[in-house]
Image: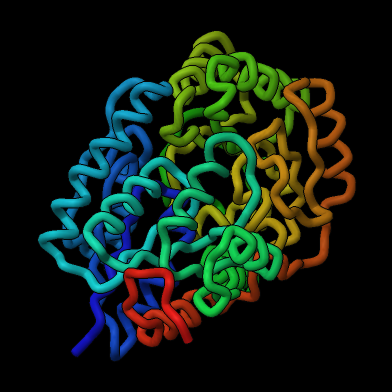
Length: 384
């Protein structure tokens, strides 16, 4: 009888982080995939991720609407509570033998709480990492709720073990998002043109001549400053006057301020070198990234996948503070002049060696193999 594994996907980033695990579970002779999709992955204004997931051949067993409108601290807390309520019902109906929760978002802790109180063993992907702000607290809280830990590297494993977790249930698998990066690295990706496949807003230009990519999210603990922060980045990009693909922020507290800043800018300026996208498939986003001159912003992709791809990164602000990073990353504050200077330096030195800091491209299959072997325990005081 196959072991039922329930994976909860709640955002575009969490799909990229877990896609190869879904593939490996689906193909595994001893595992049955149960898929739950919810939160911003269902929302049109974030470029509905559920459509991308379905195109990739994954049909959800359940969907959960849990995002309270407002994108502030209060609505984030309320969305978490709704997530716990709705996911508890879904897990009770699906009766999985293991639930998988990904990374450090508020939906992640909702998944962990619901599974834990239903006595369902919980597996956490990407635990043990240091990121700063509320995300790090959520990540570590999910670690303490989890039974199994699939971590990206040895440093992460050591942190999880220092938190008191059983070292026999902490596995260094690498990050599944690196699996996708490895696939893209193996392709002939010269001349990839997103205009041929995706619609967006703004000017079109020839990607073959070089371009930048911007992806900047709000910082939950600094959400009231989000408008100023995005305005500094916008000013820097305008001064650089370099062809740029810009992606909309995620659903975190403060995203309304970031979106407002972008919209105000677009209404006031007609910039011939900017194009905005809501969302691309995980692979297409990496194809766009690997051909870019530099990634600018504060997304974790600028720490993880780019380390493997060797893409230059200008990381802005504190959202990724403390996270292990490669030599491709330069950190700056929310200052347009510092951003301009760092980006120009990166454009001049646009090659970095590939790093296995977050994995070697085989995490998905490793995690699937472990999911059919780990003991289905609830009490963490198991003895060997």
